[in-house]
Figure 1 (cartoon, rainbow, N blue to C red):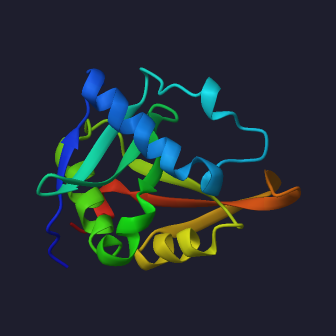
Figure 2: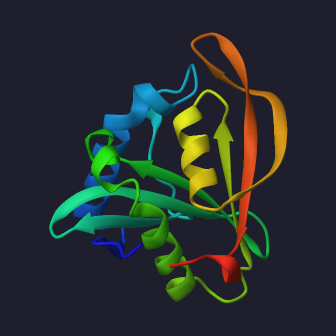
Length: 160
């Protein structure tokens, strides 16, 4: 599916930093594990953030972190108010950006998705990602322990 979204790698200039902090503030209560403190959060300089836009409208961003020598770990952060209209476009925009911009030494991207977020599990499956494993009772939300599902996708297999 052709995506109307464009992508921009963030350089973490003050306006980029502020965009990430605003995005995280809007999602914090919904997505973070029990005990996570927003006031202690700061984006790591080791992470790469990529913002997705429709014109000038920020839809959200992904965070990429080197997991090992050939694998990146990704976290998708889509603004709640944008999910209904843009969720169908986000996977191809992510795949296109990764295929066109990530160093060729990286062969795979993984995502860790708590079972608490059924909508995110469905999103990953719908995007063609493979469920590769489960970490038992590894995420706490609302006092309950939830499994974390490990999803992966070889970069060469990503469809843009």
